[in-house]
Image 1 (tube, rainbow, N blue to C red):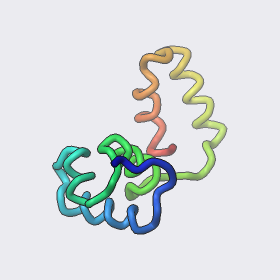
Image 2 (cartoon, rainbow, N blue to C red):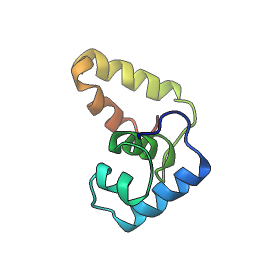
Image 3 (cartoon, rainbow, N blue to C red):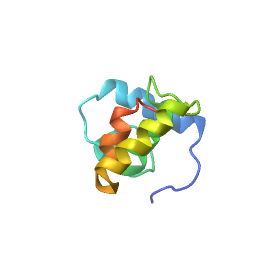
Image 4 (spheres, helix red, strand yellow):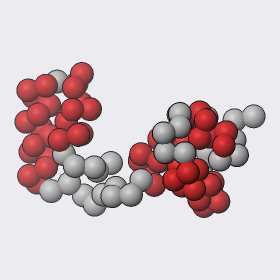
Length: 91
């Protein structure tokens, strides 16, 4: 059964250890090898949005907000991933 809801600190540690060991594995494989009752998509989102090294969680500066607005006006919604890649690693 797939677990949903909040992640426990133990689950976070299992995911971190498994990612360190199986760097090139698929997210579904990592979820199984880490012995998590989570789907691969959930593991990927947890890693990218909460656990990955170098992740910045501080507020956007005025310059970064202006940059996002400018890029959105040029690229539109379909290229939002391009915008996020150009504005560092913030979530």
